[in-house]
Image (cartoon, rainbow, N blue to C red):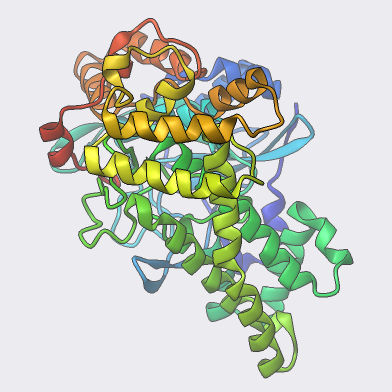
Length: 478
């Protein structure tokens, strides 16, 4: 068995609280990720071990269950937080990587505040589907191993079926973990956390002149790459708080997330984001803001002299915007099959998204129509403005040294044919929870494993109606 105690427990007890999970006598598995278990060589019997543990039986594996402490800026406001409904079971080692295994929705923790620590079946079905779709889209993400029916009803706006998600991720350490160490613990704890993160995730920075600046720079690099991938597929996270920004550069916490249909940078679906702080087009600014908070938290470790530390930190922070633009345009140029050296292509990218905004064009189908066999009526490419853009694009493409076949292959690998359309997802979850039949959900999870090939279901191509999208809201599920 490749299961082991979580290395997070090497940190001092200030960083976590041990847990005892209240038994779920009627728990039952309803979704198991066979593709993930095969990839990480997790035996099917491991699912039975988790189920037995949930039902209150002694386990030889899950003896050191805990919840993480952290702080964070939520919608710009700083507060003490912590895993309110998440329990860490330990780590699974597969493909020479260690993955933390968490239960989400397994009950209250010392950090639950007024929450019940539970999760609805609807919310966990959604997280499973979207996280696995993100993996299929080639985006760094937490993975969903299983969903267990908790056998309970839980109160939200109405009584709903409860569920527990088993989630895997290289690390659930966040920017907010460093904020917690800096503002609630002592200097020694901050040093310990930094050393732990470096040893586990970024050991190469120990050789640098200033390991702390190099660490922040590496985290920034991971985050800029991640957000560029979000922008590539029209993904809107919805709660880009510092406690949802992973040091490892993985997407996690799929609460009020959604995918944009018609292109509009101010698109917001989250019911709690009334000011549009985390709108699609604001995500680049938000990640830079979060990275500034990380830099502030690590300021005492950058240099012993405060003025010098501030000067060095300021220089690094000032580089963020340029580095973000480099990541973004590199990704967008790949979407249209141009090289990063093609400076004229940057203006072409900007012009295309402007056209998409003016015409209310579907984000996914516009790009897919450039490189995949998509029905022309579903794309905007027959419109005069788009034809003119395409003519300029073809002129620039002729200057490329890479072959047409290779560029087409590159475009097809960056532009999915379909995404989890919001209305499609909601209808799937509605039918699954109403009928308590999971066969359609199982099939959907398989379909999203490869969104770059033509699906059998033509409805995956069809954007939601404007009226439906305009009134659509997503929720945290707590």
